[in-house]
Image: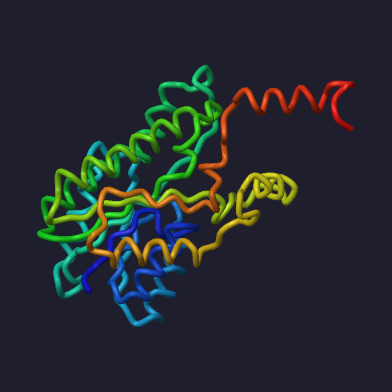
Length: 262
């Protein structure tokens, strides 16, 4: 099977991805930054599945070239980790700020982790692997223009374009795809009322779960005729915005008119 390097895999979505790849039989290179204790817990769960797992602490926001992380994995050698075959760029940082509120430091942080790190990881992965698969974890918000998340969203939109560019440049040796999740694993601080309000805007009228994410991951890893694609995993949320038009305007005006239909 080989080894899968999963960034940000000590917690949340990255953890779920690492566990699923372990169930598929991959040895796991488990990257984390500050979540050392959680990463060790995840490592133990992976070892219990009967596959190898090694930990790799690395600050993606502090290194100019994140490709060094790939070198650390490869340096383990076949006696500790088999040949590197999969790269999942899951690590992310998320700060709300409009364009007017965005400082140079915040912009740099968002682009370093959400775009620059995957860029250099993919580049180095392509240099050391004669064949393999990359999956970028993006966000269904790339379909929107939510300016209260300006820097984050611009970085993720850039990652979506990188997915397509890399798929072309590194074919046929590598396949490069992305997953753009919506409501799969909401931030813990979100209130039930807020989540219910979000769910109301999803055409399927429910949130997703980690099994949905695992199925999407398996499809992209195993379907060897798929590359350059971004699988949106959001119950239809990203296609739900119709935009304003004359019929909807007339319908709204009629509903507010005192002479309109009862």
